[in-house]
Image 1 (cartoon, helix red, strand yellow):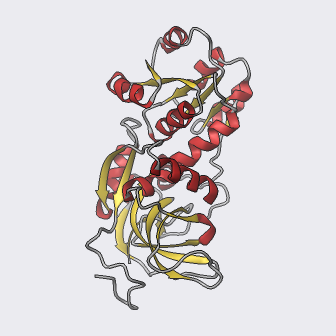
Image 2: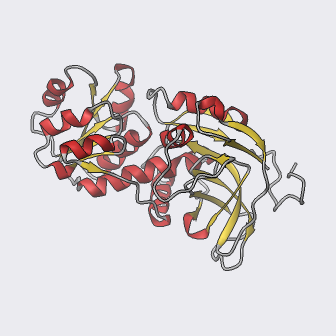
Image 3: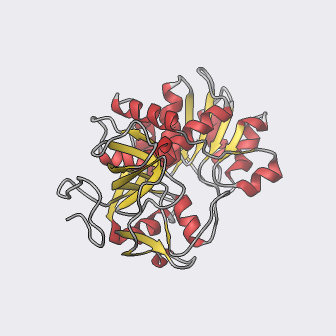
Amino acid sequence: MRAAAIDAFGPAEALTVRDLPLPSAGTGEVLVRVRTAGVQPTDAAIRAGWTPPGATIGFPQILGNEFAGIVAEVGPGAVGFAVGDEVAGYRVLGCYAEYVNVPAEQVVHKPAGVSWLTAGALSASGQTAHTALERLGAVEGETLLVHGAAGGVGSMAVQLAVARGVRVVGTTAPVNHEYVRSLGAVPVEYGSGQLRRIRAAAPQGVDAALDTAGHGNLRTAVELVEDRNRIGTVVDIGLTRELGCLWINSNRSAARLRELLDLCDRGELAVTIRATHPLDEAYKAHLDVETGHGRGKNALVISTDDDAVTGVPPAGGRTP
């Protein structure tokens, strides 16, 4: 199969496409022909040298941690799936590839009304945002500050919070103000002077804060939120130790992903795809992600309706 992998840690250009052995579905696993895969800042961090807790990097290392596709093989003991099922799922590594083998408990059926791009780019950002709102305890009637409200995690957090009746103030670049407003938040320009602007946008005060952008935004949050157990970040672990705020890891599960997909299916949650790339241009998606700017998510389109997905390709070959 073709996959985008690294042979050593390095810049975006270190991520190249090559032929690698086709995996098989082991016990309790399904093998999925990948249609789309989301691209995360986490992927770029791994490529540059970071190892996620509990993970093992082995070169050549295929990157990618979320996907959507069609079941091509069902391993022994994997229940609830059949060849041909349309699914979405997650895995720490290995998703920038034509095929991925994954435990069946990390895969859910894709609703027919959810697009392949949405399904492939939802899991990481959506589950991180969903986890964060749980950890911060944001409830109806409160005010939540979201730093980086136009980004992948930020845009998910805004929508999920607004759906719960939470008032949201979101920092973002002026070019994204209308977009953030369309999600239901009050946009505020980030950068110098943002503390004053946030206070003006939330005269009733701020009950909780989520930082999805870094750049020292936690220092602004601690000036606004009294309880530091209600201030969290998904990017700036070093500053959490200094300020006594929360480091928020995504608590991913099939149940959480299924809930998010159902929200998308009902039109209550949307994934903004700002750019798509073929597998051969995965490095370009990393270059875009590493700018720290832009709305929503990047995604890889790895196979299309023109590709036959009827099962596992023959040994030594690829599905045409």
